[in-house]
Image (tube, rainbow, N blue to C red; front, side, top):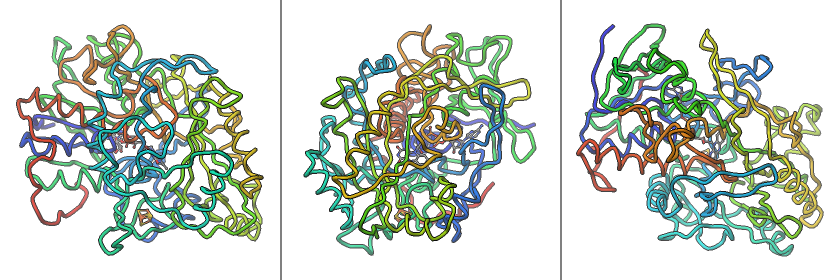
Length: 534
Ligand SMILES: Cc1cc2nc3c(=O)[nH]c(=O)nc-3n(C[C@H](O)[C@H](O)[C@H](O)COP(=O)(O)OP(=O)(O)OC[C@H]3O[C@@H](n4cnc5c(N)ncnc54)[C@H](O)[C@@H]3O)c2cc1C
Ligand code: SF4
């Protein structure tokens, strides 16, 4: 087994790891990216809903276990770019108050050790990097911004504009969703996006979606000092005899064991896999797992409480790019609720295969076609609270167990009721998709898209695993930058916060390495990169 040495090793190439690599790349330091998946194949099936939603073409076939030991297939996909290859690219900043302690129906949402102004410059940087389109001043809960969105909002198609007008008539303040996409509506030849109806849950065949692979990993790899090894699953982190430094990252590479060493090791495997990797790396010096003197690693797993709601409109809905409208009027409460409810946004447009994937009772094909043609698709998100018993553990065989009980369902119930009340005034009937139902027992544990919280950061080493720079309290050269550092989940989508935080941690690392670069970085070398799995 040979050991290659790098300045920085980053494990995982998603929102956290990919963004970090992009910012560190111009430093000239030797950077290694280890990714358990390969490049996602570009093929017609990328946009085929039968392949993606019914045949699970891109899902990993791994199996996890719930708190009763029942096996389930997590909705996980492992590719260069991580889950951002499939995300809806709705890129929200947390609200300013989300960084403080907030009372919810189900308990307290804890404060973060940093405040919104600490992250604001990095949100700005991340919005530029990920081509975020939006319009400042529309969203009533929007935090203060140092400038406008870098790109104008993605326009509503006529049916969604009508919906927006109808929301306004009912006293709401609908806004354009912040979306990360390579789209130029005034000159469509310029952007890669062709404005199709395959946005959310599909990979983009034209590279129009601003994902971590296209926006970060690909340009970083144009530099000679950055290396990517695909199909390299990190299996363990080994420390020196003092237990204070990681000396080796042990990897399973297509069945063979390899080891890499780095002055700094950054774990960014997603909240479940990062916790699992740290727990699996237990040793005599760290019997509870790495970075886990506090016993918090794996605990406080959060996943947002989400529901898809299909509204069957009386008029057909021919919209293609539907993910353009959001409602935050109930984020902090309602006339009949002094406590926060949550966020409503459009989902990508459903079709018969997507509906069949989520709604088996709509079995007759004709009914499905009718429903799909008239459907307006909403997604509601309410805050999931961190609870120590909701946790990732690893058994002796290295298998992942995920225990989860929801403790904050009341806001979800109330927000869903609000949306349903509005359906009549908005000219719609409502139908909840059963797989996404609001009932506790019906929320699929396998839906781990918004996973976070398992390796929380904080000021106190007794109650957190990472310090304010996302460095392990217990180890000198170990960092974690995926969504696992979140102490609370808020009720808006998580990816932009992971990206902004990775840029913040990158500044800390550049300083530590004595290699500060400007925000813009040096120009990237020109030319195409051949993307082949290693
Ligand atoms: C269908 C879908 C829609 C979504 N829509 C949105 C949205 O609109 N807005 C939003 O903000 N968020 C959205 N999300 C969530 C968003 O994608 C995640 O929050 C984000 O990608 C998390 O970033 P991360 O760095 O924590 O993890 P990931 O992006 O998942 O990256 C983790 C990486 O680590 C790799 N990896 C895992 N284990 C190992 C290992 N042992 N060794 C080596 N590599 C490993 C993985 O392959 C992956 O590349 C969506 C997610 C899904 C699935
Ligand atoms: S809407 Fe644009 S970015 Fe999204 S999948 Fe279609 S072409 Fe790609």
